[in-house]
Amino acid sequence: MIIFDDLPSAIEETRWIPPIYKGLKWTKMVYMNKSYAMATYPTSGYMAAFISGSNHNIAFFNEEASISAEKANETFTLVSFTACAAWNDNLHLTIVGYRNSTQVNTHTSILLFGKPQIILLQWQNIDKIVFQPTGDTAHLENREAASDTHCILTQLIVNELA
Image (cartoon, rainbow, N blue to C red; front, side, top):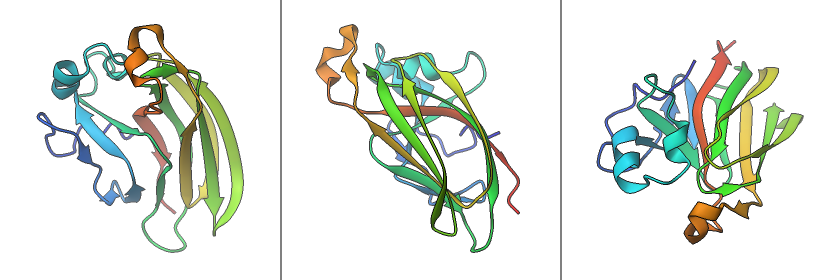
């Protein structure tokens, strides 16, 4: 289970997830600490994404982001992940799984503002996952971020690399 709590402290800012983290390549994903979120975005969906007493960091992205195997010919299983929208409702999150540059899986979920949901996939033998957030509806309490497609990941369950 990846919950991002072992990443370097990001109490005063957001930071990029390192290019290699947990044996995987991470592209265009950022993380933030709960203290920073509370001080900077107290009415956002970020606050609901922190699992009570469990995690201190969350990951997020607002455009296409990906996770892939670090080495050629490695594969992994994406069991599940927990996600929600940071600012808006009806955020469409399309997840695509690849093996050897060939699309082998696709799934779209509709995420709501501040309501984490578990997305169970059980995708085996993949070497890349692409996350693409699109389309959303302004959440009544957050009209100022009406065009913001931030998607939050609180945890991922990935089986060992093979």
